[in-house]
Length: 220
Ligand SMILES: CC(C)(COP(=O)(O)OP(=O)(O)OC[C@H]1O[C@@H](n2cnc3c(N)ncnc32)[C@H](O)[C@@H]1OP(=O)(O)O)[C@@H](O)C(=O)NCCC(=O)NCCS
Image 1 (cartoon, helix red, strand yellow):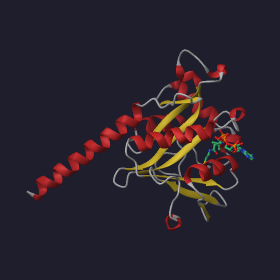
Image 2: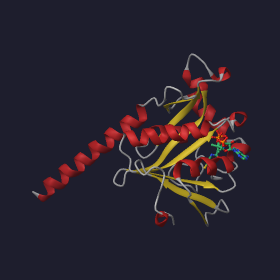
Image 3: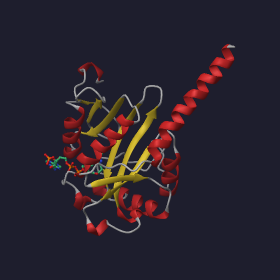
Image 4: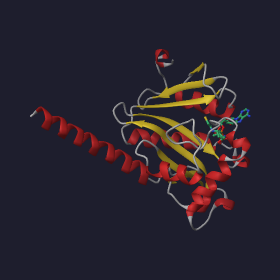
């Protein structure tokens, strides 16, 4: 009887997980006034090429892990094909392509051409209902226009709508735009040492109903 119960419990957990990830992977995320739209991250040659273009740009890579793109082992750089194939399927990552609706240069009949970057919920934990938020605007001439701020709020709204309890994020403290957005959307955060690839990190969390205020005790 106990075994049967355990089995049905794990089955219902599996169904719960499948429902969440299916919603995340197929969702088009936008708000009526938003400049950007988040579209599903699909394994196509165009997306692979875009990822290569963005993630090989030294300006874009500056604050990213030096082994980017990696998937399960941060010590090993993957090919762009493997990276996109993995992230488009993984149940523990929900990746989106960011489409800029207001930039004619990126507007194409096929929205795959319009992608300007990546947005992601990484390391999804279905028990704790947490994830790590990631944003890359791959076209540096579009920086400082509030795009990442908007993308970040779209991701948090999406996360809330599917029942996540907490979002986490880290950023290099020298990454001024990231830290500014994270402080606004996640709260004060805290700097900490060390990670091998950055001198200092900002680290913080967001919870759906906490009005952007967290107990300082969470931070490590
Ligand atoms: C970090 C990144 C996502 C920021 O994207 P973005 O669209 O330029 O960010 P925003 O325009 O929303 O900027 C947020 C704020 O920072 C400000 N800001 C940006 N760069 C700044 C700088 N160098 N000095 C001072 N303020 C700066 C912006 O003016 C904005 O403030 P405001 O809302 O008061 O005007 C983008 O630069 C990027 O993709 N970088 C490469 C990948 C990366 O580092 N990702 C983050 C990993 S944690």
